[in-house]
View 1: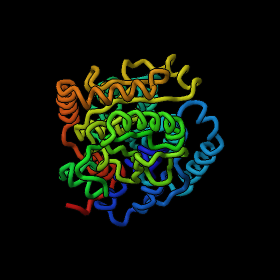
View 2 (view 1 turned 60 degrees about the horizontal axis):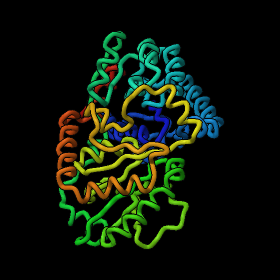
View 3 (view 1 turned 180 degrees about the vertical axis):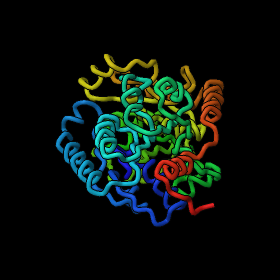
View 4 (view 1 turned 180 degrees about the horizontal axis):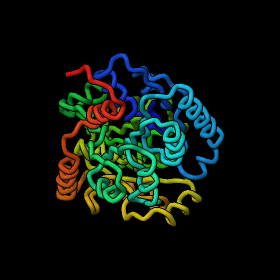
Amino acid sequence: MISAGEASGELYGALLSREIRKKWPDAEIIGIGGNRMKNERVQLIASITSAIGITETIRHWREIINSFKKAKETLIRQRPDILILIDYPDFNIALAKKAKTAGIPILYYVSPQVWAWRQGRAKKIASLVNKIAVLFPFEVDIYKNTGLPCEFVGHPIAEIININQTKEELKEKLGIDTLKKVIALLPGSRPAEIKKHQHLIIKVAEKIHNEFPDMQIIIPLVSGTNIDWDIPDYIKVIYDRTTEVIACSEAVAVASGTVTLETALLGIPMVVFYKVSPLTFFFAKLLVKVKFVSLVNILFGGEVVVELIQKNATAENIFTELKRILTDDKYRYDMIYKLQKIKDIMGRKTASNHVASMIGKLAGWNSTSA
């Protein structure tokens, strides 16, 4: 049973399910997820939520409660060989308590961001689960004194980055002009993020178009989402090709999230922005104790990319940074050099395959693959 509460976790759940099937073709996988997990033949018992932040969670509260009830009932009724929890801490820690009481082995895959806030959750997790697989090397130290077996497995996002084509070849594949340069504007993957950022990125696109009229401006989205705003003709929306769009871009403006790491691994210069509700931001300022919000800067341990958060996330500020990336060669190549360091930090691990093997050991299965 896999419990993935939101979009990025659901992607990891899908990649993991694929690897489980390679090793144990007859495995029955159930869980909380979305279309990507469903496409990997996971029997869904509830869907992921698009809730982010405090106010958004309140709006989705009934949906979350119903999902937890279904997960708990399924856990007790079907008694899976193992429960895999993917991030989504409050929900998954509560589910872990039920699984532990039932004597079901638990693997936590993708640690909650205990390094940023609520560090006491590390001890709570250690008291409930059998093992934890973390995505970043610095997370191992967090669990060192808890007694919980912890292993750095790398980041699954690296598994979907398989770009061997030139920028021109990628542009041809995407059906855009191969001779013109590209800027990508990424408002986020969740509907709530897109709604919060859509007007902002359209304003950024207007400034880009006025200053660089030959630049192609692309907004990559995932299926099931859309821009609920009038989109000018000089903006092209492309679905389900985010990696290719980023890879053929000269610069990217990206909403903070996992995609910042993907952009870094592709070596594309970026500016990071983010907006949330005033209430969510107020509590975040009180509770979150980190200097940076983007994974790129956190991993590097210093500023590699500019972060424009809340009131600083204006169209003028985002455009100014994009313009600098495009016109200041020294600045641009210094950023690219530092992004390569991020790639070196993350190493060449294959997270999903590694975690599937960990599942086999904890569940007592025998692999049928080589």
